[in-house]
Image (cartoon, rainbow, N blue to C red; front, top):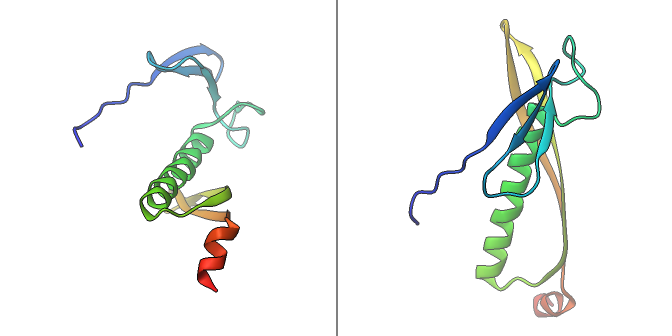
Length: 114
């Protein structure tokens, strides 16, 4: 696969709120400092949410690629990701990110296992 670059632009709007966008995508996303920090804003995606979402969506796309190559037929796939930000030796660290996933495979595949 050839190297691919992904551009994301950010524009500060007010206080601790910004907006991210990409020249090749239609939707813009508001981002803000999370409410746990001074001046943080509730109800807006934070960098911590976006980072956790990136890991979760990467897991999903990897699952889909493996399922396709393995010819695994499934009916549903859901995944919950939880990231933990903690103070460690004077620095914030984001660890760990835990993934809790559920998949429903098709009856045809289940019959092949019996």
